[in-house]
Image 1 (cartoon, rainbow, N blue to C red):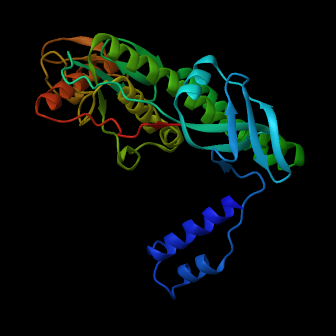
Image 2 (image 1 turned 90 degrees about the vertical axis):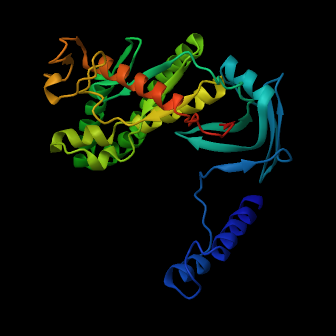
Length: 320
């Protein structure tokens, strides 16, 4: 009942604020005349009156249409359970995914004091061949994830062509597998980058890659790889983890970072003879191309910070 009331309250507010157009238009009439419908396995929000947590026993008491269910066990990693017990706030969502039930709790965690005087900046170059390369020389290779992504793409195409009941069941089983794998890898990479910046007292400099899919001109076989590249998710993970650790984050212009020499700053297309090699035509400096680009990003991040830019890590403190 509460979910239905909240849905119609939201619909009424959207109609009043003009989100569905003016009264009398087709869109407004369609939104106002169509009843709200919920999927059978849609997420169900619970507040503290309908869901209570017993952290020591690792059980919950949850209200259902058949009455209240008590002593329902839940589990999680030790770090997750500690955060849940100390920082849970607000509503929780009950979600069914793949036949398993998840309680998604919102936790409000206090931010660390921001580092107003960083010792420098850790440059991070995001790419497809190497998911992330830092100015410290660490490279997170994307060869394995790209190979698995290609295998998943071929499997989906094969199942779609068969179009049998067994093929549909198998396709449903593998649905979302690629997204979950990418998310897990991005969490691990962002955690290591933020931990290194926090340990050394530095900030993090990232490239502004907004609109890169529209700007890039690639051949057809390469377009799928570019459009499935989760660089925005990785940047978001780095930003919110940095905010929690008090590490400043700045974004810089990525133009010519792969063609500029990090030693003499000579910029030319000929400095990049291949995808992995950078060789300066003026000073003769040779390095891995992504490592050289990450140094340029680190330099630009420091200049941006000195000029008075503030950290662009998000202000949100609610972490689901």
